[in-house]
Image (cartoon, rainbow, N blue to C red; front, side, top):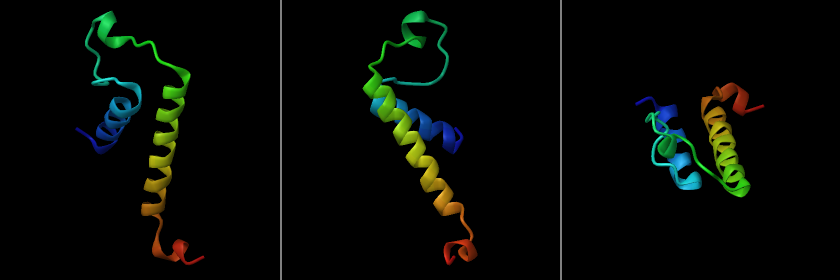
Length: 65
């Protein structure tokens, strides 16, 4: 599993109560009724993970500016 897939799955599990992001060809497993606050929390977690990844990817020269 690619790192991004693992991260997105973790976010889905923690914030949305979704076990897997793999298609399972079953409406009851592939479609979910979610509260907007859970969706917001998952989006915020994904955004923050992207920010953190960007911070780690910065070169040392950029970090000193």
